[in-house]
Structure formats: structure tokens, C-alpha cells
Image 1 (tube, rainbow, N blue to C red):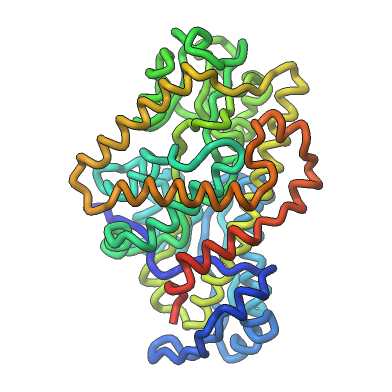
Image 2: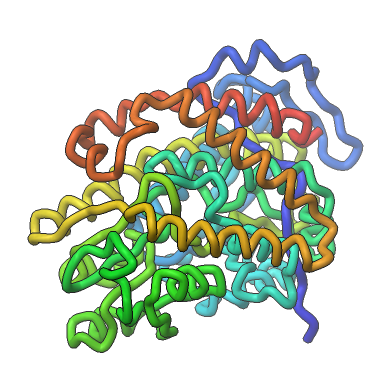
Length: 426
């Protein structure tokens, strides 16, 4: 059976804590012939609940990996809880944890288009570059704008802008039978890093000859540039491989390290403040058929409450990453940056990847992606006091309580006004 493709269609994020944004909207209540009445952007919870008074109950089938309350699931659960509350219980979610409906991540796209799933938080399109050549670019260029602890915010912002502003991403989604609401959320806990069992890797001499588990072409190229030997193995085999010394290192996210217990066997972490390891990019996707069948006010609420998903992804992602790093440091590990020579090696690979993507003949503007990444990195850096800190300095100076109180509203406001406002369902 031919596979179907995916990417963004009209969605974005409003910011719950930003009454200023409501004042910025000039839209009036919508009345769609096939979707019913809508509400103004910035509508209060009471106004939304009133608008749902005559809406029939809607249950959406969703699956997510891991267990209930796991760090990676907390932003997803917060989003679904907010949608249910703001709809006065009219929109509910039947959640299958542990990928209980579709076990293989490369079958989730088919499940969205054939009716087994209504939405998924973990579409893994980059694992099928032949079917999704446009969207696979995000994984290949995931190093853009992503440096240090502010990186996930900058990376998710430029990716979201590309999804909405470059038509090729939109078209690939529509052709696939599903849409992408947002690309990878800004969760530091899901950002790839280099973690090793016997010592910190900060230089080419440290890295030379080490066996490292990787997934994806970009990570493989980076590992080879550092002088490491990349190997591919199933994620659930890495614990034993590290414990027995079959491999020396892993290029995984902290959430994967925590889920697999790797923080106990690989406690030396390299998380650089200037260059980044390429990440596996996932997407929050929705069945196009189901999306189009929803009442307008339901689509607007699912759109507007993405602010909860994005903002909690960042703060909870920071706290979860810090918790894992604290465990590693307490166990005798270390957290280091790369030195200049290692950075140069990674930057050389990054330059090659940019040329490679530009040469693929895709209908995308690579220069615009680079400009967007730089612009959003500046926006994020201006908004956060810790933007110049190394990862280790951040871990040492910021408590969990301080992270939970971070004010990122200026970033969400800018993202919404610059990119998303024009795409709100109407």
C-alpha cells in the first residue's frame, strides 16, 4: 500500500497568560457554513464553554509512548486537560499509553489516515525520508538555531515558521491525509546529546575511536567528524551494550536515557553551548479527515490551547533534563562543552548538510531556514537571562522552582503574532 505524507495545516498557539494578545486580535466571531459558529481569538474560558453548550460530545483517539505522567507525556497531558476543561468536557481524549494502538513509529502516519488514530504527538516522518523528503529536512537541519539550554525554543520556532510559511511543507501534509499542528516541541529533555560511560568527551582526542550508538544520517556524520565510530542498534539494547562495554557512548535525548535507565551507566554528558547534536524530530499530527469534520469552535480551541503544549514542553523539559543531569553528576559523572577543534569539526558537517539539502531539488528555501533560525535564536536569547550560560552553569545556578517560574511569554507572543495569527481556523 502506498504510504501517505504529512505536514502542517492551519494551526498554532495562543498564550493563556497573555491577555495582551487578545487585545491584538481584530478578528470577529466566525460563522463557517460547514463548521458552525466560532469565537474571537482571546476568548475567555467562560466564553469558550458557552460556545460549546450546543456541541455534541467529541472523543478523540490518541496514543503516546511511555506511561501516564512520564516526563515526555506531561506537556501532552496538560494540553489535553486544558482542551477538555475549556470545552466544558465536550472534547475528551481516549489515550492509549505505551503506543498501545500502533507500536511502530513509522506506521503512525498510516494510522492517522486510515482511522485508527485521530491524533498523535509523535509522528516520526524523518525515519522515512523517501516518503517525506520535505519534512525529513527538519531532522537533517535540526542543529540550526539550537545551542545550549535555549536551543529547543529557537529550533521549534524556526521549524514552526517554516511549516506555515513555506508551501512545500503544507502541501506534503495535505497530500498525506493528515496535518501537523506543531513540529518538535521546545523540550530540552528530548534534545539529543552525547553521553558516554567512561569519561567526558570534549575534544577530538577524547572522541577518537569510541563506539557510539546513533540514529539518522546527520548524527552519523557528526559522530564520524568527531573521529567516533557510529553504530546502529535498537534503543532498548543500549543499556546492556553500555553496561557491558560493547559501545562507549550514545547520542540520545535525556528522556530516552531516563526511560532506558542509561543515566546509571553513562554519566558523562557533553551538551555544548555553541554547537548541537542533530535531533530526531517528531511532530504533533492530526487526521485531516477528522480535523475537517470538527466544528469550527473545536478546531479553534485545539489551536488556541497549543500554548499550553508549547510552554509546558519547555519548562517541564528543562526540569526533567536537569533532574536527569543531577542524577548523572551525583553518580560521579560530568557535564562538559566541546573544545574549539571539536566544534569546528561539527560545524564542518553542518555546512556540508546545508549544501546537501540545498542540492536535493526540494521546493524549499534553505537560505530562509537559516535566516529564520538565526532570527529566532536572537528572540529567545533576548527573552531569557540565562541564554549565555553553559549547560553546567545553568544546572548549578537554577533550581527546579526557578525553572518553573520562568517567564517565556514574550517568545510565545512573538511567535503567535509573527507566524500563527493568520492561520487560526476561521
